[in-house]
Image (cartoon, rainbow, N blue to C red; front, side, top):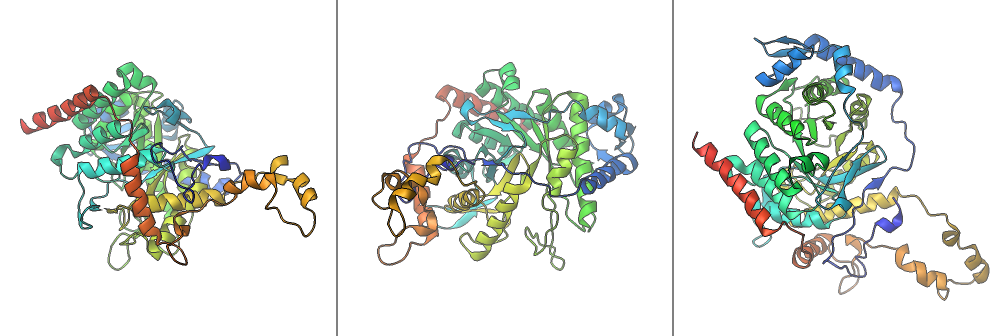
Length: 498
């Protein structure tokens, strides 16, 4: 990434009235994480699973599509088996590169191998209240406030529901989409399951986009649908995926096979199971809607071997980059986890270490989309300062991996000649022009009233307050807000009458 994209002057004050520019990580280096044989063997294993074991598909409409397009379908057991030829034929229509559009076209995300776009972790269930400091269940208003921050921060390239609208009952997931479409101009990636919920989400997106054709031309919405490991496509997620694909809305099939419980205890087998779930979902959508934009995400999950508790970062994680390489081997863009921490509190050693480790691997991964900052306590808890602290770590890592400029101006040979041995550069015009960009200070180096620096957590909390006070997201016009609220209300009423 070019250093000019950083755009932040925390040590010199910020203009919180304007959104930060997006800061995707530019991949300007070559990488060869694994020999081709490694990924090839995993791909072969995936194809073997789909042909021999198959996947269970609980949606009758999907079973009909599979049967009509050449898959072996057992309607009694709902098991679908796919030959390599059927898979290859279906995936031939899947686009390898496409654009996830935004309300503001300048924030569109072209999903290609050259860069990765970051967002938050998703669907936390609790927050630390900014006013009281107390931990409580998350609400729709909390999600709106966090989206306000997301819209400002340059590390966040697209929206994901960081916390759930826990006060909205059965229709929470569409309330969350309403918040995303209203409170940010960035691309909105939802987590909607179920046919009727998906239809409501599409209706809202069409209203904002300007109609069905405009949404198809510029998909401002995408959706994450999650198979159930091992090897099950449940009815709600499958029917939602079909609704979104028919509307031209990109779908990401995301799976988290847990080693030893919902997947083999060996990583290779777990990856193959996860890939079989993702690939079979992508095949279904290509059979139903050839050319439908689809992504895949395989995020291996770990459990404590004695307690069964979730562990995001065990001491040794092998083949961090393999899941995205495997998804790419099937001709699909990939989404990957980055960041994430088991730490119970933000600002601790564990929070910093695990978040940096995850972000560093994520930036090198090769996936087009990345998720995973802004939550602690195993993706359960949002605090007022967590997203801003993790944003700071993201920018640190982007700086570490950024190329050094070697232009004539940067090399400054004439200036070096003018100063000569034993001189100093303080009086040089070149120094005055470039010193302001030579050292950009983060949250950990804000001077205290006395010696030393302020507590970064305190600085992050203050910065959060400033952003929320001084930056105003460009929300939807009142008539559109009212229309979206009406769609959500109508869905709730319909469900109540059942």
